Length: 262
Image 1 (tube, rainbow, N blue to C red):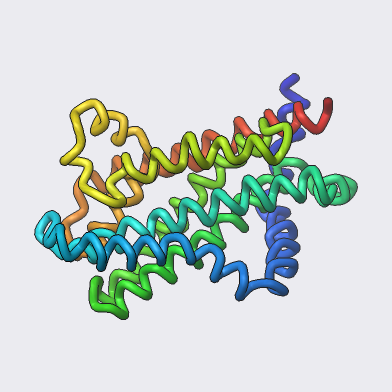
Image 2 (cartoon, rainbow, N blue to C red):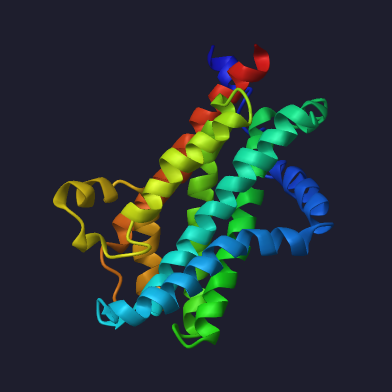
């Protein structure tokens, strides 16, 4: 059993690059449309809520509501971009297009493929999150220096949500079940994690739930950087995101091996 599980792990530290490059070359043909699609929802939320509700709400936690929301949307953009890439594009490559079957006929292991898919999803989340940050900086709601400091947080956020979504990909029998993850997990997380309004304004029970959600930790880190505030609990937030990025990877590898072997 141990040998079978190890066969689902990466063969070495660099094979995943081939998977990442394959996905990049395929994506490059539709790059503009893909980027616009990933940015549409967070950008609409930023402008509609920020300039709409912002007029009525005023200042939140000592800053304008638009600036408060922009940091949350950067994290949300990283979450959605990484998740959608994993539960839809990766699912298609695994099942519908049979790309994984072709890859497994090479020297790549299942672990190499999964790691490459996660790295690619993290890359797309980095592009999406950075784009939102650039918009916020251009509009004057964050400092230019915040872009550089936000990059590793956005990338780690993407890896964490891609890793979680890979479990869904491993378990979903068809495309219909992927919608449940969006509706029942991502949407509640969006409103519970402080992206749209402060967690401190929620009831105590919801605040405790938020403390376990990866998006809440990402929002706190990105918001502190973009608003130029001291980062509170920096170690806790970083470790939590790392745990969400690493542990689901091993679980998804085991689940995918069982699925592909059945």
